[in-house]
Length: 256
Ligand SMILES: Nc1ncnc2c1ncn2[C@@H]1O[C@H](COP(=O)(O)OP(=O)(O)O)[C@@H](O)[C@H]1O
Ligand SMILES: [Mg+2]
Image (tube, rainbow, N blue to C red; front, side, top):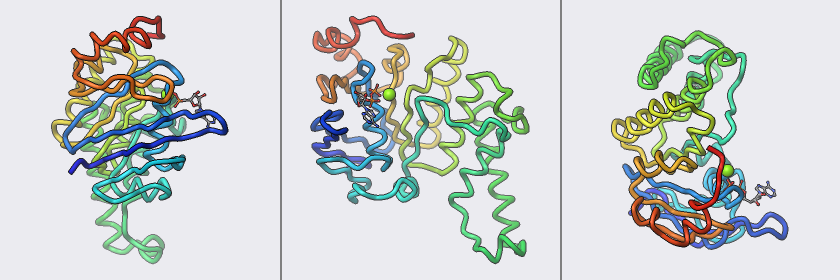
């Protein structure tokens, strides 16, 4: 059974049908790509999966359980994590604080422990710290742990966001244009990180991306969306040669 299954999902903003009869199946350990012109509905699909919006029609199943209508934090606790098209970081918080904050969403010591510093609390704090540093190591930004995010280059900020997304120990990771605005060197690094998140953590990954090099190299199957509808689905090679995709997207000028 696929870990995430979406069946005939549609979403309306007032009179605009932003997503139309969308279907997806993605199993643990699979990387899928989602491409298409600006305004096609890609980010809306992420917002629907993560519970920011509730689908007008259709079903979203996670591990076989229907999640339509659940709150974002409930869906997150079921193993769904994401990054955002526009970076959402706390400018004055340090790198390690970002990752620890995300871990706190999972901790179990109660109010009593928080006030009185029980040994359980101390143990959990130590564990959170260790996990945070392990993740930062994996992202190649451990040496920046105590820097405030504001001072970091853009590529490093993106990696902080990725570390934060992984800190909740998700089973599926939704990446919304993770390479937007990156220089070629940062691009290679982030691709390596996505590969490692996939390979070492065995996650399912759904990737929205404009750079064809990235999608083509990372994804097994790619969907192309246009005006809220999937117009093509297939391997990178099939997608690259599909006249509908070329017409709606690949043949057009886009931001790099
Ligand atoms: N909160 C919203 N309210 C109204 N319309 C929206 C909202 N969010 C997105 N849209 C519209 O839905 C369509 C799809 O947007 P979006 O999912 O952001 O596209 P993409 O991520 O593919 O560029 C666009 O026409 C956009 O203007
Ligand atoms: Mg978008």
